[in-house]
Structure formats: structure tokens, C-alpha cells
Image (cartoon, rainbow, N blue to C red):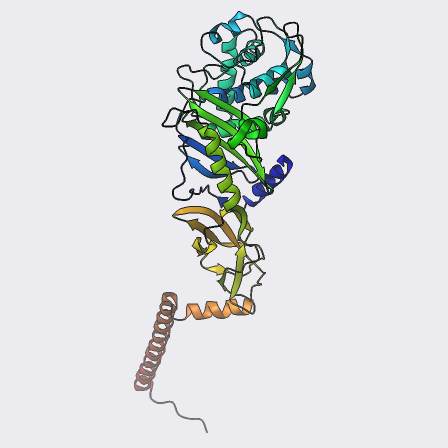
Length: 455
């Protein structure tokens, strides 16, 4: 699925050379309740954001923080990923002290217990073990958890997450620890590009190795109950995978998850859903929201051809064309996107802008205009319009056109005035010369008489 997503993304980058695409999101049906304060849904096949709610509101991420913790470790070992299974580390009391009085989730890893990085990752992502996050941070940070947190913030900045700041590796509530649904989606997508992350974070159950402190192997389960028919009950949703849950009084219920169905793949981030209903009963509204949003996406959204590259869109007038005075234009690229089936394609407004004063020759593929697609006042895409055929220049047509354009022009009348003026001046000059010659002849006759003709 990820290979398919990458292939489609490459195709989109090619199309972007001739298509300027803008983001557009869809609304859930009227009456649909989303309990989470923020939500962000991305189609991973096209990288289109198709639904969002308060996507840029800074909220407490709780254990979604551990996704970034996993990133820092996996980047450290991405060139030797197998070493995660053979590298064993432990943590001093500093990794545990803050956890004892908070009721933080753990995998019962003990002070000084040697655990592989691989098992720490599984414990952190499945069981949401806070001590596992601290042990990773302590060792990768060179004995300083704060150094590791600095690495987390540097990575967030590198990924362009301007609304994110971490103060710890586990996600327990600390001041100045926040992110957004949009930033968390960016972070999660990046994590999925790293080896083993998706495999680990989407595993339902995992058995940790025996250690000196735990002589028997231990099986841990993912806290996303939507993945388990046995543990999930009414929350079970067969299409959901991973990735991370998070719950705090200050953060509500959070969830980063994937869903795959009918060839479509989605990443969803929800944040700050209530933990209880009006009667005080524990309710996993993050799971309820995820199922509501995923079902809407799978039932209503589909990859749709909006514009075909073969569609003839307009005729562009061309001057001096050989045999015709226009060329037909079509879109330089086809344009497709995730579209809501309930919205007719006729609702998409198409505005064509054609180049003016086009002069032959024209080559097939020359850009001669643009096609702008918009819906509900939002621009979907701007697509180049190109000539479907070549049109040579007619020199005869060019000369005739030039002549026609010259006659009646200001230059023509100026030239005509000059010509007439010159003709009149020439005529007057001839007349004057004749009069002068005539007068000279008369004067000569009076002085010398009229010459006699020879016999």
C-alpha cells in the first residue's frame, strides 16, 4: 500500500509541473457529531487532506508524543535496523522517579533492567509505557533526557511543525508541551517512512523477551481497542490499524490511526475527545469519532477524474495561420482528486483564460491559456491549456494582413499626406519652371527679335 502511495505521489509531482493544485476539504453530513476538539484526515494515496476540524489549534498531545520519540530512535538506527534487536539498554532511577506518583502507563520495566531497543519500542507504542520512552530518551540523549527532548524539537522544526513544542519524551502533562492535529499528521507520516515504525505501531499483540527481572516472556496488547475483535467490543473496526492512543485529563482522548479499505488508505489524527459521557461513564469517544470519520470517507469519497487531458476546451484565434485562423487547446494534464460522490461534478466551476494576440507559427503543446477549477469559492487547481496541433505561418497571409492593417492606419494617412504634398510641390515646381522659361523666352525675343527660320 505504501509503495502504491509513493507511486501516486510521484505521478502527482509530475502533474504539478502543469497543474497548480490547491487544498480543499469536505464537510461531514449535517447532523454528524465529532466529539474530538480537533481532527485531521489525510488520504495517503494522494496526500490530500479531505477533512479537518480545528487542525491548527494547539492542544496537549498526551502519548501521541511517543511517535516523535520513536522517530528519534529509528533515525539513529535506520541504517542498521537489525541492531534494535541486539542492543540492550537500561535506565537509572531518573527515568522512573517522575512516573511513580502520576499513575502513568508502564510495561513494568524496572530500574537497571536490560531491555532491547526493539522491545522498548513495542512497549512504548503498544502499551504506551512511559518508562520505555524515558529509557530511550536517556540512552539516545547521551545520558540526558533534556538532550533528547531538544532532538525532538529540532526534528519537529525540520519537518515544518511550527505549532509544536515538546518538553518530555512520554507525553505526560508538562507546561509548554503542545502540538496540533495537522502537525501530528506530518510527524506520523514521516514516522511511517522509517523502517519498522508501521510494523510496530500496527501490531495488535507482542511478546517481550524474558529478562533478569522478568524470567518469563510477557505479552502486551495495543491500547487501540478498535484493532481487536476480542478487546474492542462495540469499538472494533476491522479496517483500522495502529498507531497510538493518548489520554490525559488535560488532553482528553487522542488517537493517531490508519485505515485501509477497497484500495484506499487514510491517516487520521483526533485530539481532545471527552473521556466520559454526561452520566460519568467512561466512553472512548476517540474511537467513536475515528469510526464515524472513516466510514464517511470510505462510503463517500473516491478518486475521481475531474478533467481529462483529451478534452478540447476552446479555440484560440491565431494571426497569419496557414490554412486556418485558430488552434484548439486542451488541458496539459489530466486532473483527478479525491472527490465526494454526493457532490455533482457539474458543481465545479471551470474558468478559461486564453492568450491574446497569438501569432503563427504555433507548435503542438504550446501553452496558450489556463483552466481554473473552483468549488464553493475555493480554487481546486489551475491547469495549463496547450495547443492540440501545430499551425505554420502563412507569409502571403502575413503580407496581406500587414497591408490591410496599414491601409487606414495613422501611418498610412501620414504617408498619403506626404505623398500628396510631394506631388503638389512637384507640380507647382514644374509650373513655375515653365513660367520662368516662358518669360525668359519672351524677354529674349524683345531684345534680339524673333529668330528667322532657316530655309
